Length: 226
Length: 226
Image (cartoon, rainbow over all chains, first blue to last red; front, side):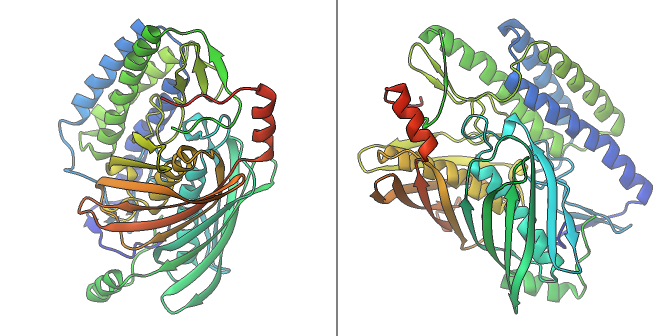
């Protein structure tokens, strides 16, 4: 993931504590991802659904007994790990994230990912929702900009949909096309399981003033996500 | 929602059966949306999380005892209701959909929605993921094109991010800017809780040849979503 060009919290945490947290809370998230998909596809009878709903509500009561007041944000551990758990595309504790594992290329300035989009990401029948494709590309493009040395937020994003993308295995790649000061132009494409390009995109990423001021005030180089 | 410019299944179902299905299966989906958010924000101890994970896995086993083989698709009932339950933005049985309720204006040719994006839709800390904003706008834009009389699939979509959008209440509106044959240009914008425009967008919607052939072969006007 890209270095966060914005405020983050720091917490005391060893490598071992971080690994356990990933396993335990990440395990719940993985289980919820499967339940989410099955809940859409199930054809069991109404009585079973009503019973399942009660159990889901009980779990919600248990887990909400203690929780952070709102969004997760970005947290950096003292052992140097960055936890962007809430991110809608890559967050390890976000059940709506597919999630994507994105590989950054810091030499050439790019990012890529192979991922699977199941029934939860549907738009037209059997096809990935066009907006979901924009969602994953926006994340990959941001990480490509960061890998190119110029992290930023999306300024503009243009998507050209060449053909529908079938649900299932997909891949995407993005690369820094050009940079000029705080502006980075990223280009990229998304491919379906057959390797055919279904979406082409171009984005302009900018490190906004408030983020530059924040970074300057902190006096430190932002850490890298892991 | 827009009339589906693509294949759909028809099932025997009365108004009463449709209403019960919405209540029962929609109720499970609503409960899962709350559990998903709480699972990200909870700070209960690891033992409680491990126990909750087991219960989620048990529910998954129960619900997967009988299910459709893959994606939900679009189903039209004999009483005239369209069930696009799997849609990633508006699907009544999709736990990852916020979900949006979109109002179409068939007189002026437009669509709008007021919705709430919670911690699950985070990108930068406290802000909505830019790709999530693209996701909701793509859906609203498609419905605006359909309301203008020319349903289609997204051909191109350009997003200009004016400023970060805080998580929470948002609204968006889109309108048909121009039409030419099978092509419709839609423009629109998204606003934060303070009513400030945070994203401006423009999209080109096209009814692709395969969809036109499918519609012509069916010999009927596609039904409207409800």
